[in-house]
Image (cartoon, rainbow, N blue to C red):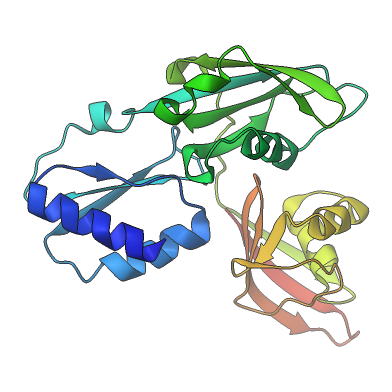
Length: 247
C-alpha cells in the first residue's frame, strides 16, 4: 500500500495532475501521512464522501496548485443503496461489506457503510469500478438485498460525532468493560463485537474481550469511531477510575 501511494505521489508531482488513492482505513491513512509528510512539494487532502467518514481517499497534488475542492472531492464517487428487510435477521455494516467484497468489489473502491434501521444500508463507492452492482440482487446473511447506485448527495449520511469526554469506574481494565462504558453498548454486545473482529487497539486487531487496555491506548470500533484512554488510575478501593475521550 505505501509503495503504491509513493508512486502515486511521484506521479502527482511530475505530471502536475492531482491523483486520488483508493479508500484507506484509519491505520492506513496514518501510515500514509507519516510516509508522505517528507515530500515538501506535496499537499495531501482526504475525503470519504461525507465529513465523518472513517474510510477515506487521499488526494495528492503539488502544493503550488490551487484546487477546486468542491469538484474534486466528488470525482468518481457514487452512493450505494442496499435495500432489504432485516427485521428478523439484523446485520452489521461488516456483513454488507463482506457481501460486496465477495461480489468482486475491490476493497479500495469501498468506503463507509452504515445501517438504515432494519431496511438495509447505504454506503459510498468508487462508481467507475462498481457500475456492475446497479440493479443486482445479493444475499446479506439470510436476506435478499437489492442494490442501486445513487447520486452521492441523495444519501442520508450518519450524524457526525462530536468529541465527548467521559469518566467511568471499572473493576478492571478489560477491553469489554472499558469499551462498553465508552461506546455506550452493553458489555455482552461489546464482547461479541470484539470476537467478531470489529474492534482494534491502536489499529491492531484484537479478538479477546479480556484484553486489558492502558492509559494512552486508542480503541477503534468499526462504524462508531475511536475511544482514547486518557488516564487509568487505581482507587483506594482497588477499582479503576478511567478518563476517556470518545471521538
